Length: 307
Image (cartoon, rainbow, N blue to C red; front, side, top):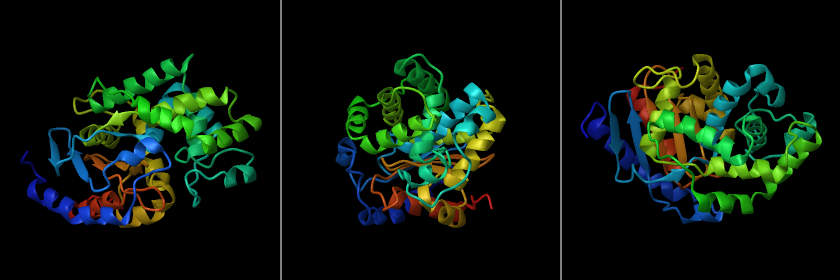
């Protein structure tokens, strides 16, 4: 498809692709270890047309931690700010995304919704009488944002994550002891691992990013997320979205973004475009190596930084 990004977008992808060799796919979740390390793909959605680059832009992958952005939006829609931020803080952390250290010093309240402990606390708030009902409500939100009614989750990945979720279970049990959560831990983990296993492609991610960029509205002007919630979510993406690389990422790239250990990255340039990237080779902090390089190049070439 020829559009305003055209051949230059393809060139930027080709230049970023070799960086994949510097990373490795997430193998601590067995189902994710099957990914092709060399893949890099991007979609950009401006509300009018979608521009693909590379040959893998329709490759399916799971949201993983990108889902944290969407469950936060849903929890805020369910309960409002006061209830949500009584359970989870608003501060960035320099610790790894799966760290338990800060919980002990902060009376078990997670620092922010973008780390695993915070995401578990937020997932606990999603309304629903069962895992299936909560998951269906989240899927309905993602289907509206992505404009793809068939979005669902990958059962193999979800089961693989559930079977290897001992650290997340530890985080949940710690928070249950301190009354941040008050439900059965395995029930919460069932929902959490299934939300992380929701499958999308780069086109879907770009459309999701566009809704956030466009103040919660899709390209037809329909409000899917209230404006203030979209603003809050984008702010967390800037301060906490790229794990403990968020500060450097804000300086080098300057785009509200959220990554996941499958190699996906969603970007939301306010009042402009949504970006979806997939590159499964990760750095030591859990971010796509080639994907980060590509976003930096996109930001520089198209002047996308919000700063």
